[in-house]
Length: 331
Image 1 (cartoon, one colour):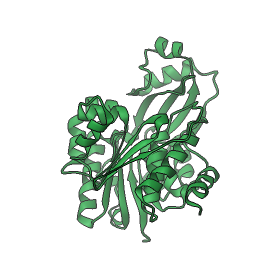
Image 2: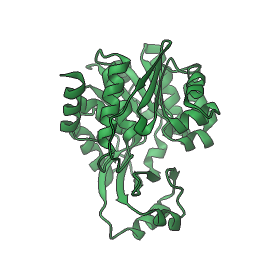
Image 3: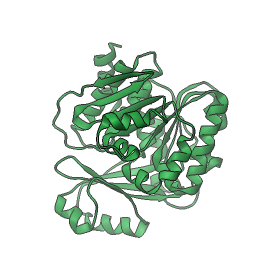
Image 4: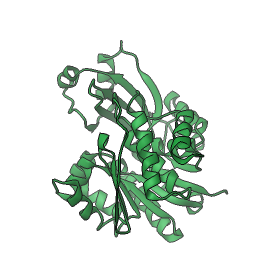
């Protein structure tokens, strides 16, 4: 088996994006800017309320979005997830394959419903998500491919996995296997609600420390019980050799080996923040696995994320990513 730059593991979800008003969120009882786990009945109820709206479907999930970014930029990536033997599941597997992400999804289809995430975008570009995990909630260690993992350079784990007992076990086993094989470990908090309600599980995945941690400003400050990013980074440095904190329109802060690097984002008019953090992580991982230093990798990640927030959808096209790569890296 050929080697992979990144081996990612996360919930496999079909994303459905819809533009809504703040009034709709309030009437529907949704907390703006949050990710809420819901059952299928609740998701169908919300879908019915918006049945006359245009809906855009794409394969998603935090780690999956990052994996696609790595592949579109020219990296090699293997992704672990779980989908059902239904229309959404087959769509998901085909979309991943079309984007160059190696996986075993079609060989592991099961009865049930593929997970789905409703992404509500308000006029201020904020995204609010309601997620029905479907069979993805039963992702387990049986879904792991130890051979692919031992042939990877980095393991990338999404924080959303900690909400499911079996998925948490899969994440813990993947981290343990990576450590045994000398594979570096990257982890993303994914959402501040995961820290609010699953902190012990988060700490279990981090364990004695990870090689690289991705988070946004609110997640960093919540984890560290800090008001300022600088203080949060000092705390995060205790559990991660490298730290990337995204700061929205202000760019990002990257820490590694005693260095703190400020990455400035280009000024843009944001219309949608969905997937920006995932794209940042994927582009950054591509950069560091292809011989680029932290500053250049951060610039690539910020340029890609800044381009993404100017349009709807959780990811860029391969052509868009390649143009950004050419602009930043000159290759």
